Image 1 (cartoon, one colour):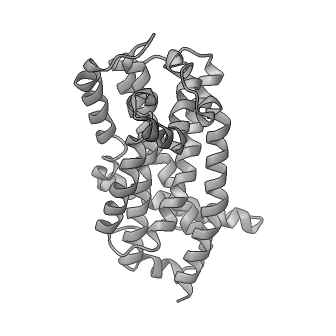
Image 2: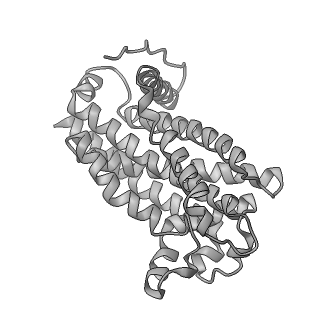
Length: 278
């Protein structure tokens, strides 16, 4: 059950109307979390389990040249956490489509684009909460940033940009699926390999040559390498990386995210409008 918050449009342009509507939808999604906190498990509990598993079990057998494995690990976990949030927004879209909530939105005098933007707003706030939990967890296990404050803030800003960009993939794919089980299945089939076939947990230098080439050009590797660079973690490992995307990880990550938004935002909005018109 959900409670519709009264819409109070701002005076002014259509953009103000749309933003007010989007914030109303976002608040509605966040209200659901208050009643079902388990919905945040994919961005809070699950990453903590990965930290404990790799820091205290697998990490004991992993040697990072010139560095601390837990400091090397945490940027990978941060990145994995925001990527996993894609599954959450995908399931949320599927739930609203399959339970008739979208039909109810269609009957209301609200901006059509605000529905999708509201979902991405709430997903971004969930990712921010997940990152806060992960930072606290990282500090407890020994993670530290070694760069100026501006660079550290840039690292978290990049992580939120990654979350925002990938949320539009989640929205677009979610509009095609019929059940939350299908959304979870797609997430595990696509997202898990993307995060593990990368430099998330270990350097790719130990991979077979053909596998290393795939991992180095996986966008996840660029995201992880960029956050390590901005936090000053795994510097010695970064000096051994020869792949072009990893040598220019920050601009490559920004370019990947911008490309994803440019492609999937209009695709998702177009698909949603067709679904609402049918």
